[in-house]
Structures are given as C-alpha cells and as structure tokens.
Image (cartoon, rainbow, N blue to C red; front, side, top):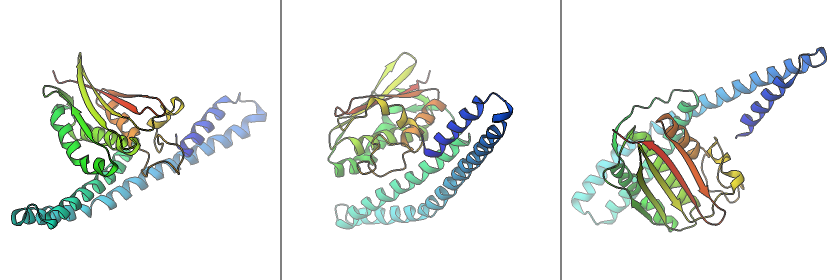
Length: 269
C-alpha cells in the first residue's frame, strides 16, 4: 500500500474506534477532516496521473506512424541493412513508451471505476505470441529467453487489449526480476477457466511481500537500491484487469527460487 493509502486507512480506523464521548469528539472530528483531506489528495493524484498519461502518449502516436512508414521503406530497399534494423529497434522503443503511458492511464481509470471491459472470444495463443514477440528484444538484452507452451484451442472470454496488458506486465516483471534466467509462459484448461502461468527463476518474493505486491505503487523488491525502475503498478493493474473479467491472479514464490504468477480467466463457451 502507498504511504497516502496507509495513512488514509489508519485514519479511518482510528476515527471509527472512538466511542463518541465528549473527550474524544474533537479528536474524532479532526481525524474525519484528515481523512477528507487525504481523499482529496488521492483524487488529485489520480487526476494528475491521467493528465500526464495523455500528455505523454498522444504526441507519440504520429511519431510511431512516421517510424513505421520509414521502416517499411527501409525494409523494401534493404531488409537486412543497418537502417532497417535501427528503425525496427526505434519502433520497439516507441511502442514500449506508449505502453508505459497507457499503463498510467489504465491505473487512473481503474481507480476511478471508469475501466470498462467488453468480453469477446480471444485466442490465447495468438495474443501470447504477439506479446512475446514484442518483448523478446527486452528479454535478450536482460539475458533471458521466453518459452511459450499454450494450446491453440484455448479461447478466452475477455477483452483482447486487457489480456495483452496482463501478459505484457507479467512477462516484463519476470524479465526485470528473473536474474537473466529462462522465462516460461504456459496455460492449460481447468474446467470452465484457463490457468495462465508466467514463471521465472529469479530472486523470488518473500512470503510477507506476496500480498503487498498487488497493491498500487508497490514492488516485489522493497529496497529501492535493488529494485528495477518502474511505477510499481503493473501487478496491481494485472489484478484489477483479471478481476474485472471474472478471473483473478495469485503468486507462488520462495526467495532465491523464482516466482510463478497464475492468472485465471474464463473460457469462451
């Protein structure tokens, strides 16, 4: 939980604990005022995040379009040339930037209850292939490989973009904390649902932190000197997206033995 969220929860609990006696009435009123101030501060922060996300993402759309046009021309002239390779890398970097800005926007929408998801039949294998292809350069840079074991007949009832976001966040997390080891994305049918697992062999997560990491602005590694860069919202957003589509997420991990995140989502009838 973030510092402001913890203060808000603590203040609400303290205010509720007063018995209404004359000696505590002033303190209870003061605590209620503090709760109101904290709520306004949280609302202002979420509004700020939404505004920042729009400002960061919108200018990149025409830039990405121009990079794609240049890349298409370079690939026609010299598909194996350095210009084409450089533009392909630039396109990947811009796409990653846009996804990070989109994450901020989705966080704001989820917090304010404006994250509307429409379920439709979605082939899991196809989305998994797209996400892994987009993240392979990042994994290679970190010294990791990504193996995929997803059956072609697994069709989910979910929103495709939300599924993309879930897989992207989980695999990115595995790359960050996987200690240059192999990463596996696997899935299997379990009655009316699919269980999707993303596993790494990295630093692992202490038991005491395995609930905390699904809160906003929290990370698997609490020490800021050791933690990779990021907003600390990826796993929180995974949980919110999975729950919004009738599923959930859980983690199994031991320190030094890696981590496995399991997302459960309904299958299409």
